[in-house]
Length: 532
Image (cartoon, rainbow, N blue to C red; front, side):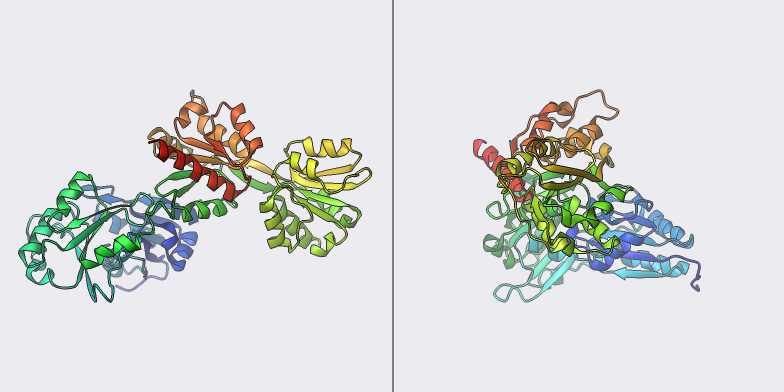
């Protein structure tokens, strides 16, 4: 069938094994531009954050014997949307062509004359063992590996049936048992007793090491090890369920020395699900640090930073910046807005040549360095306004002209106290923090079911907006909806706001920075595990 120029394109995109950072650059690019995203349960939900807000998102997840949408219906859906002229991303866990039924979906597109593109992904067959510290090949243990399906489809072309049939007969166990040094079975948890029995029946030693990696590369990853003789019983005792990858071979022994992803010594927050309430444009720094320490960050940006539309006041000030003695930046949010206004006015960092700069903390100082190539002249030892006042380097500020570009709503203690000391203080609002309560229903559900370990607050506005988000439309107070989930604040001002809303904090970071916040989380969970 000839291809119509009016058709859109179907992109069969491998989402990778679970860790959202393992998607390919091409896959992420396509998610950002697609009209329609058809995704399954093994694609990490965080990947949907890369999509357009107006994109149609269709969940077609499959678990064993439990399908949100049958395969023929999925095929019909992606073809129909493409025939409407839309760009369709079929987001598939792992790699589309490694037991992902991507070949079948591509065939359907070909038959319908719909253009398609294959975007390979990192398969769980390789990634799950790697994240468990098990290399599928090793010079001293294995020079070959084979990937095998744990069960074959039935004759109706739907997976889930393990009764012997024509498809099942394709697996010749006498050859398969010795096909490679390392055997990797996907979708094989329920068939594990049969798999282990067949391998032993056809010559594999009962002492052959075996590992099952459940939810490989996700922070919920679990690993059970044993031998062909013992693994089925150990998996049953551990109540390990799909999805899981089964690895058979001597390489499994290497986990003892190569374990890294789920090692509590190097990743002390492993398995913890932690809500990040920072604005979306700021969340990555905290999320990345949490992820490096083993946690799964759940971004719930309850605030949105928006530059004020009326730039006349700040533009006028920037033109005479050299008349000010000091500029005090009380948030990193102000830095990119100042940089943007300088560019709009045809100015650059030289506008600060005669003006000293103070920042409330090291994060704001770092933003200043990165975005304006300027070094702060003064950073207090504690990231609060009171510390600026106590440690300000100019003992006599009477008559000094001080500029504070900040949020439209902020504490008045800094400008008021500076004015009391005789300074001429110019407070210029340049941005506002707006409420952003997307995905609140999902968050409420996760809190109710105890699926969240901690919530982080990095400013008073994140506390206020978080409380507003989860209590909107509910008769219950925030403290009840949060339950036993641990709450952690970046500093005392944020902590005071939390207490005003009746929230009980697990801890407050002693160092009022993002690394300090993460350290406080680690200490909190370490204390908890010690008491257990």
